[in-house]
Every structure is written in structure tokens, then in C-alpha cells.
Image (cartoon, rainbow, N blue to C red; front, side):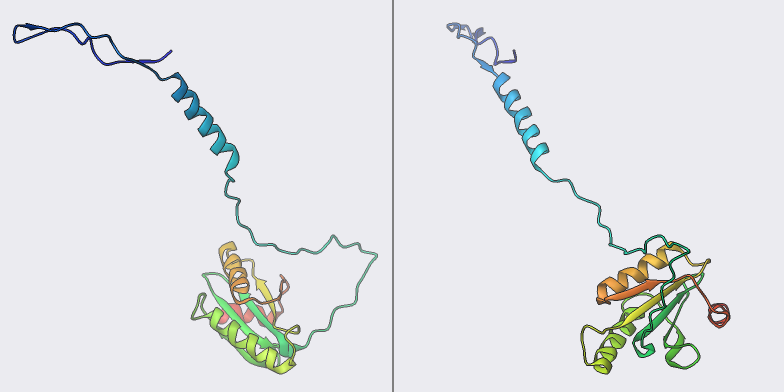
Length: 182
């Protein structure tokens, strides 16, 4: 049991004799029990912070027997972003043979790819006249690009609110040449 002693209370001061006072004792056991009870209560009732992650839809495993027809997408709605080494990013709108915009090297961030995505998102909605048929972004990370760059471009898709994006690792020879030249 814990207790608190405040001193002996007696003694002589200046030749006067004082009567001996009784020691006052405070039992601290209840306070210690209460402290542990409160600690336990708050530990059990608080929610721990959950790691934040972005949901990423991945395709199911493909069977060789089942072949689906490729989906045709309007090239006026498609923006392709290619990621290279040394934080290099090249984009083009439409088909590479007949692009609507680009191919052009662009930077990451608010004044770079985000500004372009917002502009293209608005132009696609004007073109289709339907909010449901919005911009489709194809992200093509090369073998030399960093994982950080892929996460950065996925963050930009989330910030801008691009409803459809795909990660593709298939490059045409012309696209590889674009990543190397500029």
C-alpha cells in the first residue's frame, strides 16, 4: 500500500516546545488503480490510424482458353502517359500516328500533368456531351521508370478525378523511341 508522509510534525523551535502532531497519511492505492483503469479504457476505445491506400482494380487471372474481344475506345477520349527514367514523362492525346495533342514531355505536379489532365477532362466532356463518358488515361510505365513516378501519376488521377485509367506495360517501337529521344 502506498502512503504519503508529510514529516514528523514535532521538534523544538526557538526554545519553545510544541505538541507532537499526528502524521497525516494519504492512501494512494485508489489513485493508481484509477490511473490504470483510465489508461486501459482509452487504449481500448481509441481507434488506431489505419494505413491509407488507394484502391487499384486488377484483372483476374486469364485462362488461355478464354479470349475476349478487345474493347474499342474512342481515341478522342484517350490520353496516354508514358513514364521513363529520370522522372521523364511524355504524354499524347489520341493515337500516336495521328495525335490530337502531343507527344510532349511534361513535368509532374500542379503546373504540369495535373493542369493538362484538367484541361483534357473538360474537353472530353464537351466532345461527348456526357459526364459518364469522360477521359480515359492509359499509363505506360517503362522498365526504367521508378515506382514513385507511378504512384505520383496515380495520385494525380485521383486528385483530378479521372474515372477510368489503366496501367499497361506494352510499348510500341515508336513510343520507346519517344521516351529515349527527348
